[in-house]
Length: 329
Image (cartoon, rainbow, N blue to C red; front, side, top):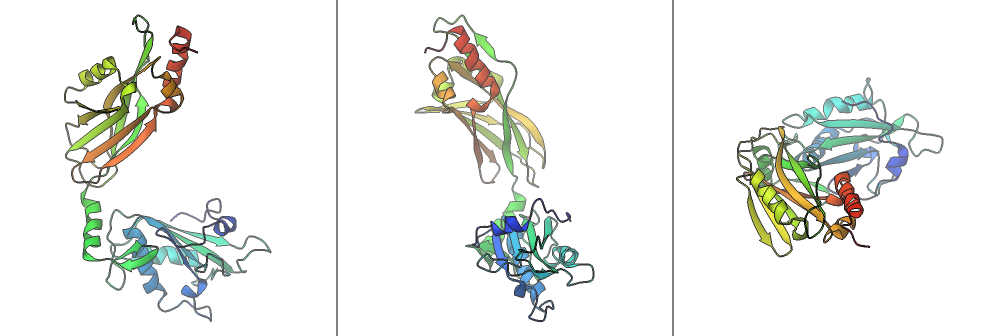
C-alpha cells in the first residue's frame, strides 16, 4: 500500500470536507473502532467489512475513521492498536475482510499537526480510500453484498448483484482524446473567400476487462463547421463511414473493423472541419464543439465533448484567415 501522504491528506483538508455523508463519503467516530477503554471493538471488523464491500461494489470513495457523523474530528483513533501500528494493521485487514479480496485501496494516517490540533496526542484520523473494483461484487463477512445507496451502505438485492456482475462482462470503450492530425490545409483560390481545413483524429481505449467485439464511434458537429469539402474528405477517408444530418448538426458514424482487446488503445475515426469567414466567429467564441459517442457491444454508451477553439491549430487557422483577408472587422 502507499505510504502516508501528508501532501494529499492533512488536518486542514479534513477540516475542509463537506460535513455530510454521501455515496462516496462516510464518517465514523473513534468509538466505531475502539470501546471506552481504548480496545478494538469486537464488532469492528464485521462492520468495516460491510463498508468496504459497499464502496468497492459502487463507485468507490473514502471512509474516515475518527470523524463523527457531523463531520467533526473527535480526537482520533489510537495509533498503536496493534504492535506494528494502526495504519499497517488496517492495510493488512482491509483487503481480507471481503471476498474476493480487495486489490485497490489506500490507508492514510493524519496525525496531530500542532498544539491547536483537534487530533489528540498518540491518535490519528484514518482515511480508507477504496476504488471501484473490477473484481466486484465483493461479499462481506456476514456473507451478504453491500452497495452505497443514498449515502448509506445497504444490502444489495438480486438486481443490484446482476448489475455489478455486468460491470465485469461488458467492455469499457471510450474516446480518450481527440487531436489535430497533419498540417492545416489553406485554401486561397476559392472565389467565396479563403478557408482552412483541419483533420481531427480520435483515440479509442478499452479500459474494461472484456473484449469489445463490436465498436462504433460517432462524431457530432455543428453543420456550420462542416462544409461540403470537409464532408467529402471525411467520407473518402473511411469507406465504411456513414453520414446523417439533423437540423443544425452533422453526424459521422465509424464502425471499427476488428475487436478491441482489454487495455488496448488505438487511433480511430478521422473527421475534417472547416474554418472560414462564415463560422470563424463561432470558433472564436467557443461555440464549435465536437461531441463523441462510443457504442461497444451491450455496454452503456460512453460520450463526451471537446471545444475545438481550444486547439492551437484552430487558433493558427483563425490568425491566417485574418492575414488572408477572410475575416471582416
